[in-house]
Length: 381
Ligand code: SF4
Ligand code: SF4
View 1 (cartoon, rainbow, N blue to C red):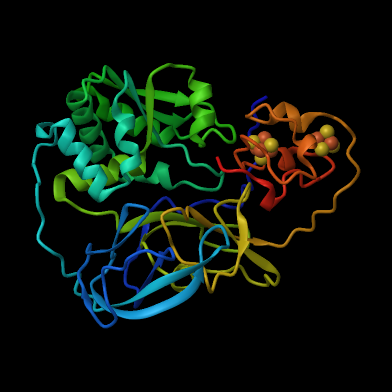
View 2: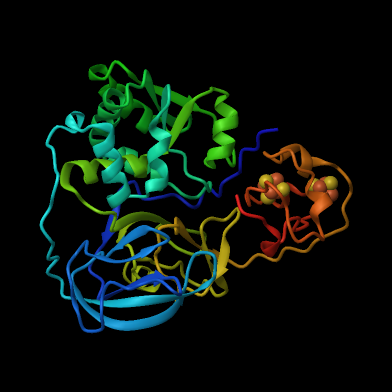
């Protein structure tokens, strides 16, 4: 059973992306036992590799000076140690290497090497497939980062996808867009004439289709590769300009604010710096909370400690709503909606829920308002 989430019509996003790139400090989470490649008071260039987290290189999103460390939190409410860098606002960069003007001139090995150094190398192997799917589907109903990236950078995305089809000898690519996004659909259709192997695929709007495993099941096609529009745009910048990933889009929304927006920020920004600068609160709003990563499955966080990391997608600012649970009436809807065919009632008091996607759809749909899957009970996706 596919569930379309009823959205609050009062929460409408501004159609224009904003930037918040002028922060005084940035903060980069590092794990214990890793070897830092920078020292206290050292000068750091924009995009300099400051350390590697599990072999994934982390690059500074500003130029400036290392000032020390600070404990903050990530989108999962976990306490993290961060390296603090003070911005000199000069955006000084190291020299670029290995750039080709025409992306189609790259070999598979060279694309792989760029992904490994500029992006997240675990995606590299996924490009060997018969059909490539580029998803503009965001995970939470109130998020629109992937959609806005497609809108803002449609030419760059189409150019990159077209080159990947040549380089990896892939037959076809499909740009996935939700059926309600009529403006984006028109925009893509107007551009596709020059790309005969790239097609538009219009997708139903139900939750949680933005999660890759659910989307894979929905498409029912073998030997495919699904990549997000953000990945393709970052790959474009890596191949064309040797740019590392130092900025990202996040959605700021919720019923406590007047101006829901998509904002492009430096990775490592403290969330409170964005809120203080860009968010306008509604009048007479008293009790509200900050939720990281969506209304469906996000976590309430302390906004003063939250830092923008790779996995922060959104900050929702909502008025507090009491949720009083009743007795289960055994209607079975939670089981019917579960995209992984689990019966969430069986896991009420269990510590581990195998294959659970953490989507929280079961609790959302429950007429008795039971929190079926507790925060700490999830196993990994
Ligand atoms: S949806 Fe709620 S009330 Fe219905 S069976 Fe599941 S837990 Fe019980
Ligand atoms: S059991 Fe897990 S996967 Fe199934 S609906 Fe609930 S949260 Fe989603």
